[in-house]
Image (tube, rainbow, N blue to C red; front, side, top):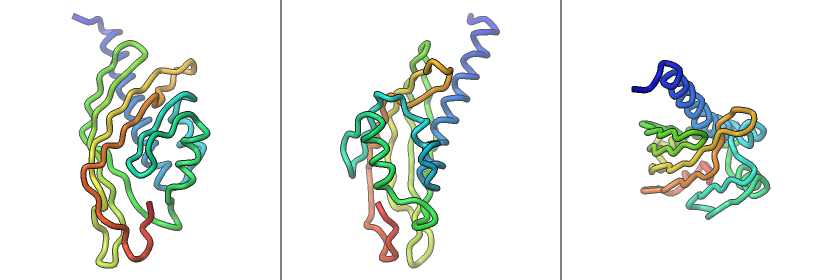
Length: 149
């Protein structure tokens, strides 16, 4: 059986990983570029269906700038049911997501899918994405009001 210290470390790691998962959505939706970039290891790769693989900070920053943000366009990325597996300084996470956008009739789901992530504990102790696959399983067209990319 794991020691109390090992069990506590696992809980702390899982909590810190969830903070990175949540920061991704908050920063993307509200345009916090510095916060978003702090979620990524310098050699990370982000896979978005709409842009393909974006490798390294420069490409991920370009993708962030390409994406829409509040207040120009309001949308919400929701992450649910993360399954976190920590193995030392590396973790894998599978979770589901959906995106809520503003349509003429009111808020509606724009897309949903699954995130498949690999995170690493960096030298400063923070957990950051090494790789994120956003597997889009369904998507509808943007609203006429321009509910973006």
